[in-house]
Image 1: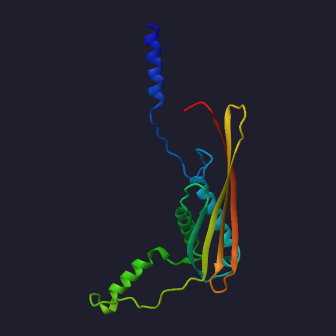
Image 2: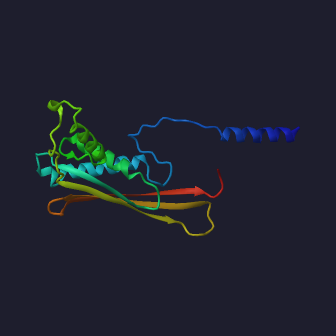
Image 3: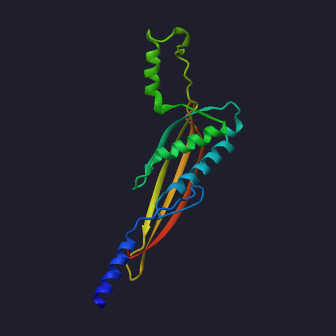
Length: 199
């Protein structure tokens, strides 16, 4: 009898522990599941970089909304980080400031396809776009992500500690002179302690 009760209790605990739960989070509030880069970091990096770009030269000293082209963020970490999501978020935030404009590099092939089609005989001549009027970029936005991971050495302890350090660097290069006109970085480190026994 006692054996059956114990088996029933263990089974119940196992089933309760395996249930899936769902919660809704406010993306504007910091939240971290572990020591790795996450959406909270994406927002923090974006805010830092956008704030720095628009309040420092050369952008802060211009009123003509200079044109920028983004050539990506290099991922020099050992983990998968969606650098495209970072550049898209930075581009969106900068566009909304109305201080800069961007070349749509990702859509160049589609633009060429559409302009080629319009050059044919199927489009009303009065509605065709004029060729040779695309705007050249004045600045190139690039950057890199690096990381360092440190784990606690062997020893007698209940938890394993790990620290991840990240550094995000972005720079704005004048395409006419090749001079880096602006550069900034955002860094942070996060520690996690995981028990050796558990699930």
